[in-house]
View 1 (spheres, helix red, strand yellow):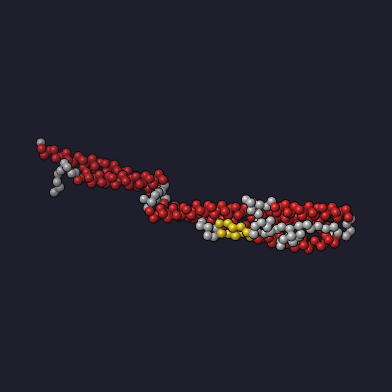
View 2 (cartoon, helix red, strand yellow):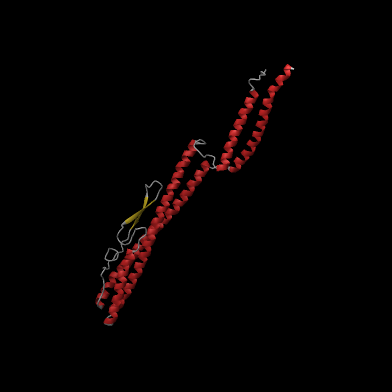
Length: 276
């Protein structure tokens, strides 16, 4: 038989414990709804929070990878544009040399062609000198290669080989002071120009392949970043539909708990009737 006591109201204590539990659960649900997170701190779920933080760091690091790949793309694009320009200039030089190789040409006409040839030749050097992006030039011989970050911890890189298109080099064998004064000397340059044009085309193909590789990896990094972000969401995001249903239930339970506590607090007043 329960003891009637004015000092200890067991019913009120139990009702208060249940109400406090309901209020705590209600606060948790309200926090999840407000933040959209079921794991907003290490206190909510230490293991899930630690994993999420680690993956957030990876996502942030991948931003740096994407920036590095973007810079590499820009460098290669500038180099390719310069290479295409050089190829066009070499073609023009071949046209001038071929025209000058005509033995029926008079000296005045050949001199005019020579001046044009020399001007185009010098333009190649100017083109290569100005083919820089962010201080990096892949076609003037100043860089043999560049690298771009490939993963979040920097342990892997993409390497892009430079293509030295300078006059008198291994790709463009035409000398930097190449010129002609006679039909025979003009004809002698044609083979060198053909070889140089073909070599520049091969170099452009290599730059194009490198550019495609960088673009493909940048696309992969973007997809990887999205996948990791989705995984983080699966760990820490709250199901708002579920939390909304919980909120309604806990609010109702809170009201009932307040009523139960009120009834329990009134129970001790029945003891007074024993002394009337």
